[in-house]
Image 1 (spheres, helix red, strand yellow):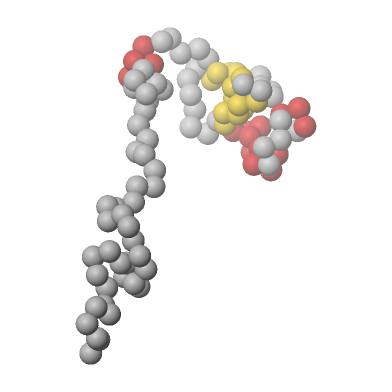
Image 2: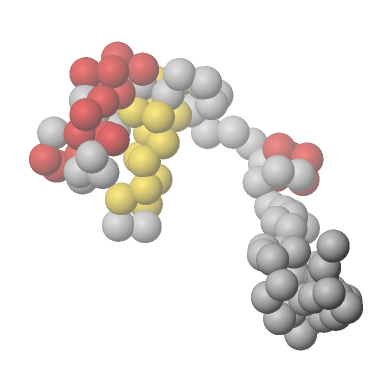
Length: 100
């Protein structure tokens, strides 16, 4: 049996450490999409331009799930699945496409 006052109180944590704040911690804010961002249907109203592979020049009528998008110096470069597969290590190493 514990002596009087030896157990955890309202101001101590589970191991007896002093906890001045009794409200729960919040680590991060919830992330939401901006209005008019790429997740909304408003962006689909724009006409889709055909994608062109930045390496071999292959064309695609719309976004393909197997293509890779790379942002280099603030511009987007799209790579077809064949070029992305050939240069997978360079892509994962975040090398610019000039080094491939």
